[in-house]
Image 1 (tube, rainbow, N blue to C red):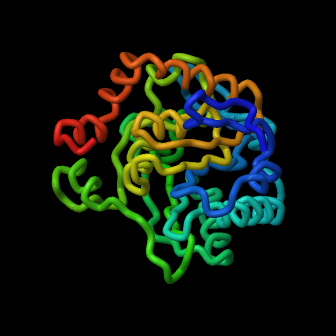
Image 2: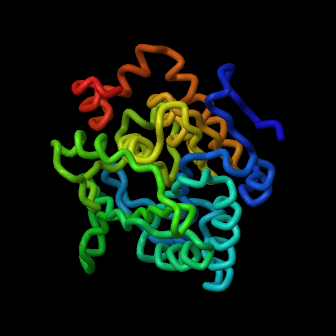
Length: 277
């Protein structure tokens, strides 16, 4: 199966199309970690604040909700396809909110994964709640699960301890939402910050391991993977976002830009100070 785009070093490859179609063509047992930011199915005409302006929160047709049965079947299918792509000691990370995360957890258990943690990502700079009728929505959840119930998984405990001030890292991560410097090539409506992906990749992969993202968006997972000397395969169905990912990857071909990004990611900066990467 030929990717839509691949770097000369083949450490960053993108497939254009639906993940349900493309996952089947990838080799089984190839990936140490999968990060997935699937549709939350929240595009229902709601509003929020961005840069001080009231905006619609609709992301696109791909995020429009269906029946609970449809959403369950969607999650069950892509999670089933992903499981076979993991190495035996591999793990998968899935983001969500209370709207979808419990349904994803159910699918994981039914498919034979073992859930390891439910990470709470507490955003240090969330947008305000403009209705003033609710607490400000400032968190997302990240399920972390391994491939097998009874086979152990890879976890870089020592690295996580170092970036947490030499203390065990807890399952609440205080990290900022996406910063303006991460939007130099355009904006994706659900783009995740490099700091979040760097921590996930550091926790669950070794150097030169392969990382897969079946909902690649603007390529954040791949950028973080390459900055950390891991290899990446992404699948994205929207061509505009594939092209954005390519531009972002081209940015870090410049060693000065790559170094600048690494300095902006606190976990990487701390590890470099400790001479661990």
